[in-house]
Length: 463
Image (cartoon, rainbow, N blue to C red; front, side, top):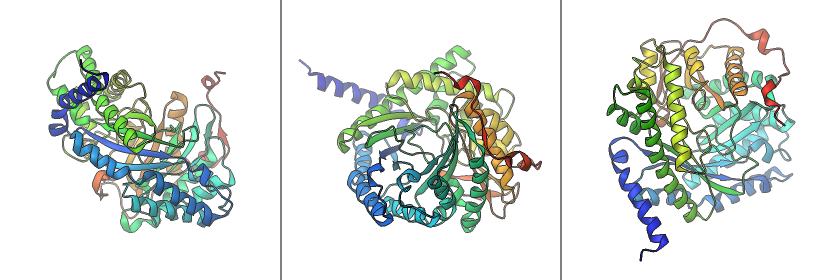
């Protein structure tokens, strides 16, 4: 008689075999295993003790993270591309000991030093949650971001400026326009790369494993493993086999494919959690593209029937894709979380780059697309002389979309120092390359300079 454990193992192995072609030929991978670690117990009135506590705890809990990810990848034949860490928002951890921005920079350097020692790709959570207002510590951390991004390599930063329940903190939005500009200036020798590791969010989830917006929310436990799976190449491949089919067939095909992809992530997440001795958190099924040919969300939109993303019908096609991905994911795992949908980062998706170069895709159309996709305006290079007020206006627009539609939205724009519309910027690796896109020349200075808070929408009152 076959035991329950052995039967379960057989099911898992059969799932891996079923997805073998996806892995070998269609760019399926586990994009990240992200260990979320609470640093609340590391806080101390002494900056030196806080930094020491942070380094010690990270080294203790994450010492086997990279090795475990590599071992699972080899044993199961599933590429595990990135191993990452997310932490409690640093503004909270440093609130008792940081009296000036330079103090937070010391915490940033500690986090970066630990990330390098552990061998993780990125560490996220150099963050502040200011959707209703800023504490003194929040503002200090935000003002430290440009210097922190300039003096670290693996640190990622995020600031949540709004939510459906609280509205939008426009003081924080205005400040972030200045912070992004200063970050671009301080990292200008590297094509303003610091801005590629900085994202401004609305309705940020506590359990997102994807950078740059990952942090370990205060509602989470002490340590947890979250896994992000990505398979735009897989979805694109299966859609080619049903070219010209009805919307019903199209939706069912995407949903079934998302189910299979999520099952791979579930297997990896459970195995990683078991080996690391920490709880399994969530699976984030996000169609996150890479610059590699055949690994593009834009290619999926073209396969649905668009000449280029940006053509009429683009928002409808993206809404369909996002919805079916989520439906397939929630059937495959009881713990789907994070963002889980389709990403549209320009620099990381060759098809999106091609659409920009063809004149089909603009920032305004991308903004419309963010109403129905996972995140927002992501990895977009803009002219270096774009005013801080215009960047703040872009952030406000995206935050409003998230607030009103009760979804996560984000802005990760790079005002590349010395670059103008039509130039191309090389970021390298997963960050890819990007054409510099046009920003409206008309001013919003008077609007973003008003100060205060945009109230929450009427449908936020549900108690």
